[in-house]
Length: 60
Image 1 (cartoon, rainbow, N blue to C red):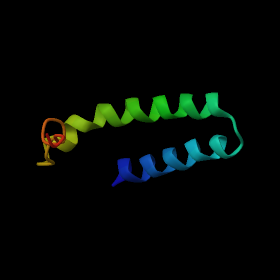
Image 2: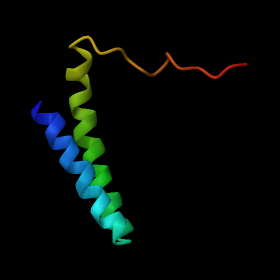
Image 3: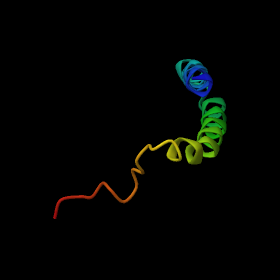
Image 4: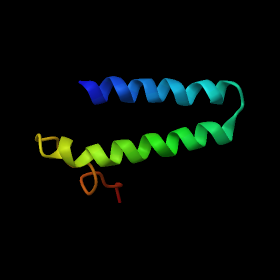
């Protein structure tokens, strides 16, 4: 629950500079957010969350 709330705050903090056309600031915040999320992904997977990669394919 803590990480979920933290992630929501990060999303809102990314949107603020986007609205102000501060694209480099928003990009930096997004990079930080993705790094934090990536480090938490293995913990989520160990709780039974299905892996998405490899499960989604394009129709032929």
